[in-house]
Length: 126
Image (cartoon, rainbow, N blue to C red):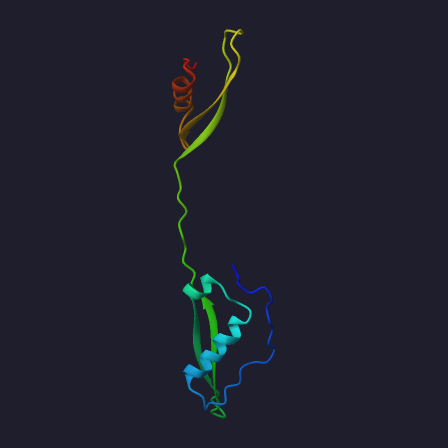
């Protein structure tokens, strides 16, 4: 999904001299992040966390902008039914075995499977 064919690497960390605004520093951090990550997902679900750390001894302050992707769990549709392939073998040996698919409950009983086979295969399940 990344649009970039060649990911450029910039080993130099962003310097926070405390003189530039958060907006300018955030813009630089985002541009640096986009050198290696550029996708539709990032465009729509990406952002940045801002953190500010102050040393209690020397009172030096450092700001940092860390990229993140929003993680949204997407439930996959689930069915309580499943398709079961069954081979029907007739008592009458002149008839060829018949392979059929029936839909039954995942948590059903054998009687449900027999009933479904009877409907589709046109036989009485024993």
